[in-house]
Amino acid sequence: MSHFETRPERPLPYSDEFSSTDEYVEGLLNFAAHSDLFRFLCGGVHILDFFTTEPGLFAAAVPKDWQEYLVHTKPIDLLDFLMRDDLSSRDSVPGSVAPPESLVQYVRDIRKFSLRRSFRPSRPKLPVLPRQVALGMKTKKIHEVTHFAGYIDRLAEDVARVSGAEFTHFVDFGSGQNYLGRTLASPPYNKHIVAVESKEANMAGAKDLDILSGLAEREKRVRNKKLYHRVREAVDPSLLNDEEALKRVAKELGVPDEDITTIDLRSRKELEATYAVEEGKGTIQYVVGRLEHADLTDVLSQLRGQEHGVRQEDLRMVAISIHSCGNLSHYGIRSMILNPCIRAVAIVGCCYNLLTEKLGPPTFKPPFSRPTLQPVNARVARESERRDPQGYPMSERVSTYGGDGIRLNITARMMACQAPQNWTDEESDAFFTRHFYRAVLQKIFLDKGVISRVFHGKETDKETPFNSSTNPVVIGSLRKQCYTSFTAYVRGAIAKLTTNSDFSQYSQTIKDKMGNITDGEIAQYEEAFRHRKRELSAVWSLMAFSACVVESLIVTDRWLFLREHADVVRDCWVETVFDYRESPRNLVVVGIKK
Image (cartoon, rainbow, N blue to C red; front, side, top):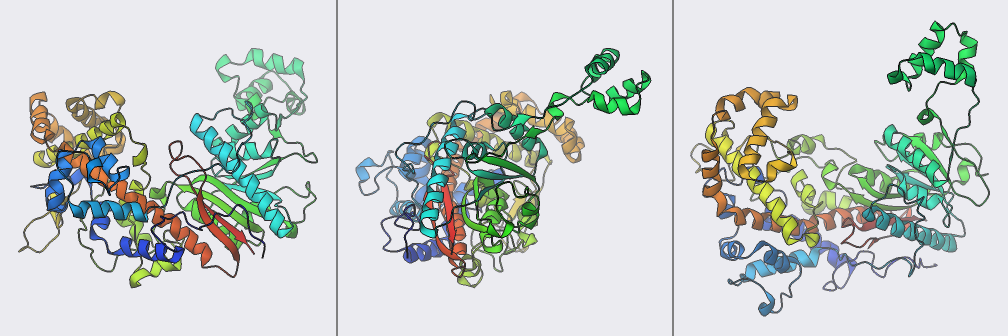
């Protein structure tokens, strides 16, 4: 059987410490299912409750022999230790306190089970995006589109060489502004693109960019210019772009209905983009629709007729996407199994926090699990109860591992969206400070009676961070100036909670309980917890670092799903398609149908 040249030697980019793919997968699943520390750091920490118990979450949950090293090591040095330092040489480990062996071993495990992220371009030299095609793209997007378009082109050539048949269309799941599709439809690629997008505003913007790039033209119109200018002169200048207002004025001027149609009062933006179909040139078709599953019957029904001379039964399509959010990645991958015309997939996922959950709540309470009535984003319990068959995990292997499957709650999946290898000293200090402000403010809320402590254990149990929680107020983001000091943050939060209609349920309570708090009292809270800021930054760093395994598990689950459909799937693999420094969600899941 012919071999795909684009396929890497290993179907998963795992560490050299493993002798086979099966050994890596079993080791990954076993670690994710049975490491109590991993499960605590990936799903068991709620920053808003960090200081609401004594002696605090750090002292209660972080292993005692880790604590001295973590609080005595500078945050940027800790990040180096976690992700970059040579652990075999203790001389290279920073800090005045040596890390305990159990911490070193945990770091080794996380590194070992995290998929490798090194990157090599699909071709030695890729085409530079023409200026008119790159319109609207920032540096990150140019990098992503340049490399993924080159990768898709090479993959398509490879599949055509092996199968003897070329792809007819490239279906982009969640095309947005259609940067990828526009690039693939333009020279030198000249592909036929089907752009599936749920938001009409995105689609309208994409069509405007198509016109500017030369892939489409603005609809030509013929109008009665004399009547048109007469109507515009009579209308209020503020209504010049309101077609209905212009029609009313035309009627008031006595213009007959049959003549109104000849005026064509549509604004320039309302004119359709028209796409010429020429031999050897790429095309774009837009399909409006919010995908709720992987069945593409409705999408295919919206395709234009026979412009390309391709019969419906002869369609050979590939599903592609750069950073399709949440379940959209699942729909793209699953589409190859459910739709005969989808012959391959190449999907780069992101926004793991938007995935739904398939398994429901765990049947047993794992160690270090923490109760909370209203979690950080108020979705944990609701999402877990949904048992969405389209959600995570996709594969039977992960869904049934150990008899109960491997769950990842939204907190764990949110942390998998981090990119700790890219954090600089200045950037990490800024968001450590923001999290510190959030945590101390919740302590103030608790002390002032804005929120209450909820006890989840038996009456005879001693209160701990694992059997009690608060019902925290989730504030969200504030204006930039609110992060210049803790006092500014508290004042900004109070203002938002008492004036924003989204927080009306808190408004009166905040006014009653927090209305008379002084700047001096706020400063006292900040000073009381200042020395514990490093506890929070250390735990957040450990969470983000550990979540590299969460992302590896999610990606491996998608690959396992394809491998489990060996009756349909000829080959499948995962590899990097972007430089992690430019775009950290850089793993593509590829599947080729038999």
